[in-house]
Image 1 (cartoon, rainbow, N blue to C red):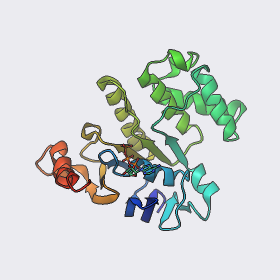
Image 2: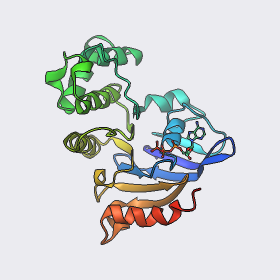
Image 3: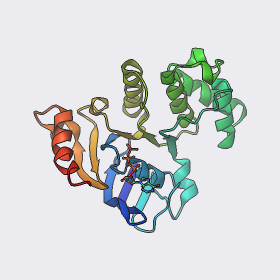
Length: 243
Ligand SMILES: Nc1ncnc2c1ncn2[C@@H]1O[C@H](COP(=O)(O)OP(=O)(O)OP(=O)(O)O)[C@@H](O)[C@H]1O
């Protein structure tokens, strides 16, 4: 398995269980949407996948590397776009990317070639010398995605990357990342609570109250229902149990 593999993952904040025996695989080159309402456990899962948090239960494997036994190799294969923006707003797009490349030990011509390719890929080449502060929200997010590609990861993790963006920017970003998995063979895990970001061919993982309720192809799981209705049917009858 060279994509992403999660086995039996548990995580608790004190007595509150945030993840309960979560297991799934994302095959290489697949776009998987992790769909869950607020509080489902998406960010907790991302914190474990990026090793911000650790847990003794369960196992995570990235591109064949066990995250707890071989964290350096596993983390080197991951690109991450966190929910909170992390660009340095006072630096240009290019400087933000060059700095990140240096953190990954890339410099000189290799760094410049990788940066140019990532900017091109996200349709940002003409923004390279603008200050991040002067970009709109959609372009800032695309800069973060370009940055996450520079070290050539095989798995890209995005935690609700379209939060706060208008409809056109959301669509541009969702389309760009779907194309990355389709055309570049990138394995993608995209956390969201918005069903319109998910395509019928995507793998759909429905997470609710820390448990994985469904794992399959989105179009098959939703059947004849719009995905939004299918999602609500899976989660709304359980929302009353929450309190
Ligand atoms: N630091 C914390 N301390 C205690 N409980 C927490 C903490 N962080 C998250 N939780 C709880 O763990 C559960 C999962 O939260 P998490 O943030 O992972 O969900 P989420 O799906 O990312 O939600 P959102 O879309 O709102 O970010 C929720 O019940 C949340 O209240």
